[in-house]
Image (tube, rainbow, N blue to C red; front, side, top):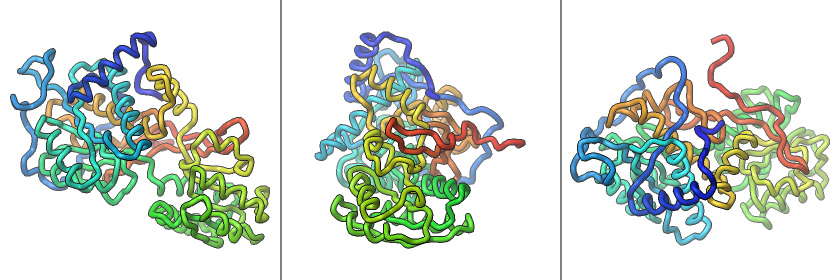
Length: 417
């Protein structure tokens, strides 16, 4: 479910988004809105760090726009992303996420929101400096950064001023005390797909896991989930996260055994090299179910017969497809996988801004509403630790795309509660 719909014609949208792009890059802004929480009020969370220099009033030195009266307090939103990254793919991702934020602003119709941008840079100092500049311009909330190291770098300054951060990192170690992670956590995806497999008759699960931080996290969660489900761990084989590095380990773990599922938390070209290697080495897909995470969520995997029938956890493809269609209609290209997070972040800001007073609208209670929010990738809500709990579907890979084996929940309200 999307927060709003585009009603303008494509030429109108192209013109307005072009204007919005110039405005945002020049540290100006546009409007926004989101789905609002439904149900009982959120509990007041225990306070964390007490702000030493909180933003509490609209100052003349804060950034403003000509159409906003000086005595009116707009919603100033700082966006920190690696806009000037030396890596082309990362720079393109940052640009696409900004476009998605602009699309959310346009969808909302809220003319009170000003988006201010700053480059994340490549060092802790550059990220911290970006946050300070945006807060000096009056940012009440910060969207981004992308990387955990950057989140860690800005945390002291944002907590000192009581400015919450909606980050795109998936490293839960940086969350909490005003830092909220919008990203899809590998722990949640692993738990979802492994729990589903156990519930559907798979009781001994082997693993082929990259020797990366992501692999470490998913393997730890796999062990915990298997134990909680009274299942059994099979053989665990680690591999260097390269196309060549997965081949020999894949042959090792594919040897006939008594495991009835194999967990492979790896995506991209490495996945598409490793999966055929498993079959070549003798893995029988009819007896051993392949399991993965949302790193498998690439359309090109439907062209890999070695993955057909495998399960992975991720957002419902219908939700993702609607957002992708809107993005293509507006910008003429497909959005990268993380672009929807930027849309949700700015949309969430707008929803809360519409309900609260200046400098009191992004409270812990508001951000951690237990009923959650509906975004372009399904429902989500923030826990007391600042991480996002998301409604995930179980998807299977087929020649004609991904199929929903078990739908994502549409509410956090438990039946009978």
